[in-house]
Image 1 (cartoon, helix red, strand yellow):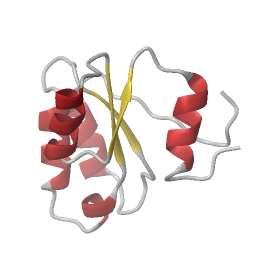
Image 2 (image 1 turned 90 degrees about the vertical axis):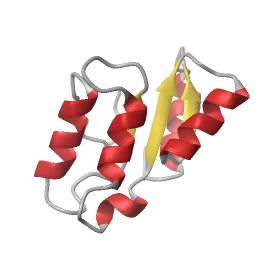
Image 3 (image 1 turned 135 degrees about the vertical axis):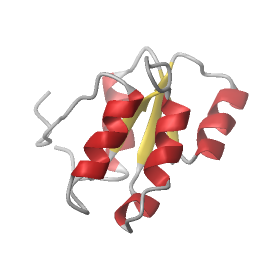
Length: 106
């Protein structure tokens, strides 16, 4: 996709937490967090990210990405500390609109 964004990936929730923890404050603009991952799921990963001893993670937009699209799944994601919920399969237009709420995509 050519939206003027750089993308990094993590193989599991623990790696996602480590990437955020190892980056300088403000490095990440938004995180797309899969819920069902090996080693550490997305709910636990976001809780660990939000608990890091740094200011940027308190307001860092984290968007849940999951095939679970029921209202209770959305509520669970928000309760875990995510800002929004995007259900799979991902529709490109919805993803771009969602990202556009937090970053400049073109």
